Amino acid sequence: MIKHTCARQMLAWALLAMLAGCATPGTTPRVTNTVLTKTADLVTARRVPTSVFSPEDSVVCYVYFQWDDVAKEAGHHEVEWRWYQDDRLVSTSKKRLHFKRTPYTTWTARSAGGLGTGHFSVATLVDGAVVSTSNFEIR
Image (tube, rainbow, N blue to C red; front, side, top):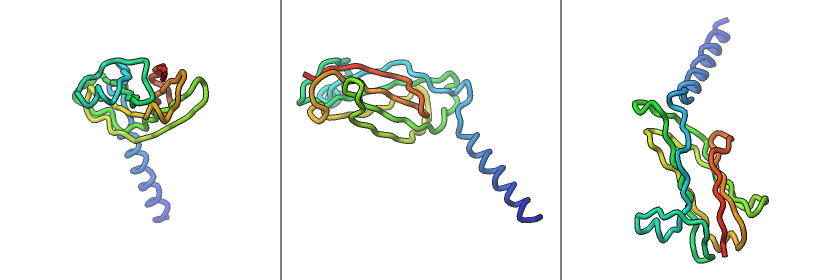
């Protein structure tokens, strides 16, 4: 009997900890903007929107988030970036990020030369749901 009670208490604490990390309606992050830019612009602290890259460039994707309750964190979320050439997945990366204060910015980068030439897109997913997609060309 004591083992069952202890196991139930541990399970209850684990569930409570998981729920505490979840966003509430006032702290659900939403995308406010997405910008693709070049590393050269990143180095000079500029975020000039770009949709055409050369193979010598690096493609940098910024995604900007906000949530309503500025006094609260939005918690931890799994953020994934999927890079496509036409409809074919060519690269992916994933991070668990702590959305600590609003506004919040995520970013990822890929070498344009490593991707090749043609039509591409990068999709940003949060907790498995696509929240942003940006199209670009490498010529």
